[in-house]
Image (cartoon, rainbow, N blue to C red; front, top):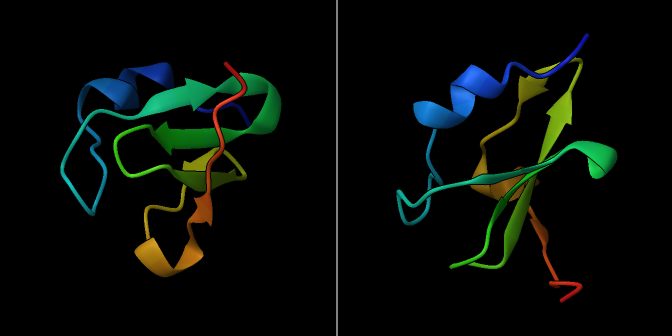
Length: 59
């Protein structure tokens, strides 16, 4: 099941309420402000702080 990119317009980081970036190859939604990565499981974003992993930018 694919992630619906239209959701990016309405979802926000549960910690800071900031914008999330979709990383298709890793199936993650990333908050660069908080350096958190939220998993997408079966096309559904899991926006729970306790399920988020630390995100290290590759830039």
